[in-house]
Amino acid sequence: MASGEADGGGARVTAAVLIIGDEILSGRTQDTNLRDIARYLGTFGVDLAEARVVPDVQAEIVAALNALRERYDYVVTTGGIGPTHDDITADAVAAAFDTELYEHPDILALMQARWGGELNAARRRMARVPVGGDLVKNPVQGPPGFTIGNVFVLAGVPQIMRGMLEDVGPRLRTGAVTISRTVRVEGSGEGAIAAPLEAVAKAHPAMSLGSYPFFGPEGYGSNLVLRGRDAAEVAATVEELKAALGEAGIANVRDVESV
Image 1 (cartoon, rainbow, N blue to C red):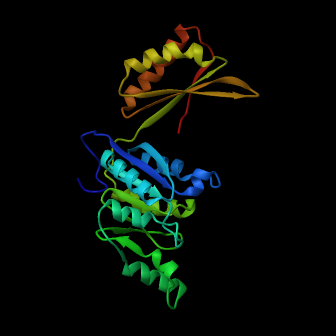
Image 2: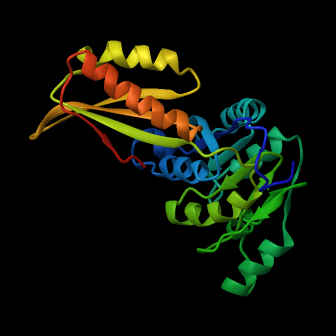
Image 3: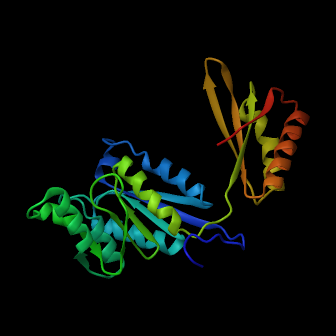
């Protein structure tokens, strides 16, 4: 099936995110890319099914990448494609695909147009792409990312990563977009909600039902989130859940819009 074509058979399309960098694991940098990638992929009907964070260690990156690309339709990596010695993502991806790196002439030309003159060794590192790979456009600043096989290699800087994502979407095999609805329960804890929620969840195995408690100055309760691909089933399940909660004596239940 061609990239960008919807999967008419209804098969689930999945993806994983591999976040690369010691700075994430150390807590010095807060990752926001995972959230943005999940939301973006969701608009194409691609489910983010797993995320991993690995250090700047080539063997760790290769092992994680090989495991994820075998299991899921797509893998998106972030981080480690800059000019410094610890930016080893390109090396790791090439190793995972058992291929070599080369300096892509289009990236060299872009960098020379920007910086002029002879490019130093650090900047030339950012022009390296695995043999057999294609470029991922970078509309923000700096060199492009790249893709090889079912892997998309993007920058770690959030603004740049989001720009690169815009070139990823049209290449994806898309699936049915997941519909999400929320039933908000106020003034009841999860212990009271658990039984009716579980009963409804078991009756709809194709859907995802989850409870997300909240606490604050205005009180406590749970947001019950229902997710599925069939709009009619989602709508019917919302009503079924509200009825089950009412039968369990749980009041202050309302259906709210969900992202």
